[in-house]
Length: 396
Image 1 (tube, rainbow, N blue to C red):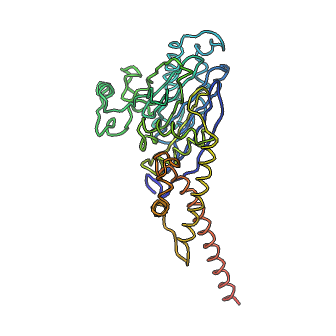
Image 2: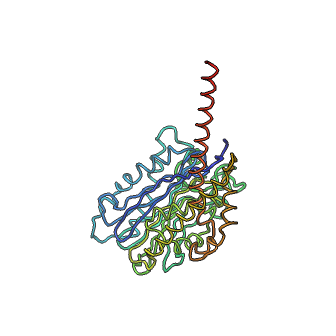
Image 3: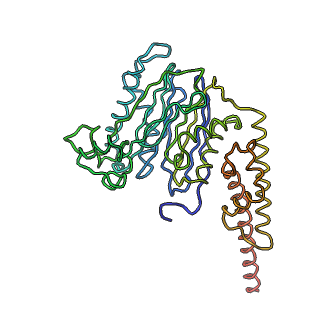
């Protein structure tokens, strides 16, 4: 099968819930990749700190075992840091001290993972947020991204750690490596991550000065309850299809149309899967209760009715495509025919907020895949029954 599948895996892991002053939703999809290496951590109440919350997206490479281990153990490891153990809900805290403890926890955890067997060449990026009563503490290690939206605009976005950037190239070359085609030693296309210990074995240098650095960027922001809209935490597969600003624009426009944030996150993944992304994709959305962007029941009902209309039109296409023994090959012809015959639906700004048919390709694909699979299964069953009948006749 090679690096990619012939057909994407569009089933999703979905989670949702609430935290102190916000709602959250999560969606993860394997997509076109042969395996799923994205993982995540969600702690709406961070262990004993009920007014703190931790949300991280982990994008793995070299297999999923490493990333899975991080997803299962890092939060419990981090809370054991002396700074977090000393914190109590309601007490004053030093945000910079908490940020440093977060950063140090990642460094210490990376060193601890050296002792986990069969994982030395695999690793993962990390991005996300520790929400405290008064601050957002944003962490980034690699090329996934965390974005803060305030007053319907992109307020902050993490910066990718890429080997070609001046600062990263300088460190790599000082560690005896080189950068070619935006990769360390023609191999890894990120310059900071957990794991991949063959790139961290120069005992003459500090661990943050290796070819691959485990040092995260950590940024502290004061919360602004009247202005904070949402935080989006996304693996890099999302940004094959969206720029930072485009993702913010999509979410600002679509939050009013969705009842639950995990459904909205899932829609983003569908949009990317049927656009330019061939990667695993994970998105966590945190939507703040006082945001001026809120769901609208009328728009939600309108969007649900539109989806049902699109499903019906997709079934009409399937029935036509399979009429008289014909076969429907592929979903792309279905997309084209739907846009050709029903373009008035997808060009209506009230329906699709100027995103066109791309907004609803996930709805079309899901109905197409369900309908064509059912017909093909019925055809196979009928063919098998005919063969069985012929076999019985020959035996008699």
